Every structure is written in structure tokens, then in C-alpha cells.
Image (tube, rainbow, N blue to C red; front, side, top):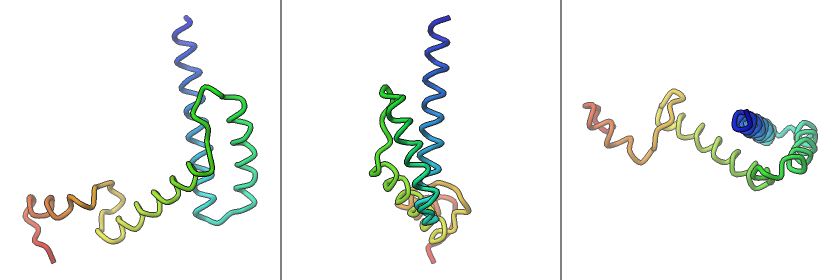
Length: 102
């Protein structure tokens, strides 16, 4: 039916967008210029072929890379073991579960 087709196409284009954005982010973090160039070409094609989806811009890639770097730094600093947690709430949560500030 038409709605199922629409849903499938939307899901597929969003999944491809996420895949390309993630690949570009990882290449920025790894300083892989050659790989990033290839991915940017794929992103350009994606943006042309999917005008209905929010385009992937260089600013989107850089923001994603900065967020990933901050996540990694917070995990190391607070010993979160890969868990996503708002650093502003860590003191409150530690006190609530009986862990004293060091």
C-alpha cells in the first residue's frame, strides 16, 4: 500500500543519511582525508538525490565529530564506561546512590 511504501522509502533514506554522516564523522576523527573525500562525494550525490531529507552539510559533520569527542572525554573523565549520562547530574546521582564526592 502507498503508506507502507512511503514509510519504507523514508526509513531507507534516513538510514543512508545516518550511515554517511557517521562515516564522515569517523573519518574526521581519524583524520582520514582520502576516505573523507570519497564520503563527501557520496554525500553530495545523496543530497542531490534526496531533496526531501535534511541535507548533510560540512557543519553537520563537524558538529557530530565535536559531540563524539566530548562524549569520549566525558566518559574518560567520569568513568562512565560508555554510558551516556549528563555530566551536570553526576554529582546528584552519585549522592542519590550513596557515593560520596572524591
